[in-house]
Image (cartoon, rainbow, N blue to C red; front, side):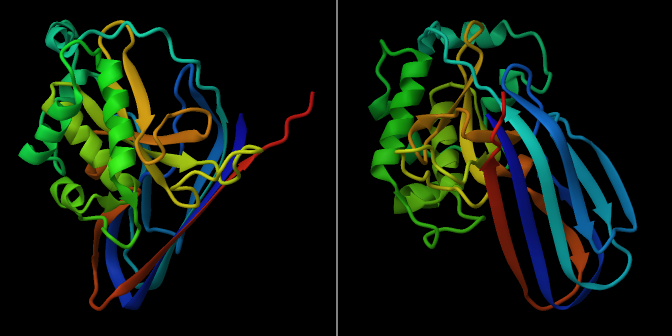
Length: 295
């Protein structure tokens, strides 16, 4: 599938701010065998005093921007054309959880895709006994890693209600789990904590969902804004796979990857600091439009 993706993030400040320094991660990735960025640009208004584009540790494209002059508004616009071609999942050759540590120990690298980065607590994801107990109630000793991940994904989708008003960007997995409500960030964080509690490496994926559903299918939750889902490591044979607990589906051609990380802190679309006082308003708009291809 070929898509045109448009994103607009806007910050409107009560009073002019200055001295802003931000990191922006909104440009889709190119991933061999899964996704190709055909073309893409990230524009910032007002123009920053300094800008450096490079990749972070997890190989996500990012722009570091610096503002010296006062400004009342910040607009970030991303335009991209992306080709997504997710292959059909291979047969389940993932091990049982009891045998997974051997595969993890056999991965002799600390590169960006190493499962070693995704096994313990991370900046936003601490151990949670309640979520660990929830995971143990779902996982059975004879289940493979893939089967456990699919079961936890389905259970979260069943037990949780999608409710944008219930949580905010700082809600912890423990709080979201207690509420059994939230958005894609909450669903994904709870699932990651659950998987890690069982010893399954798991991480956070930020990206986009197509806005227009295929004929005869319902619109997916999370469209029209940036979306989040989960990647988990299935051992040396199957490697990394992705599931969307908000919609209880594998990540497929409707899912466009922007960034991979341990949790939201690693992939936040915009983070930074600035000098100012008062409040600000933030808005976000996303369009993911299938491109009609001619023969």
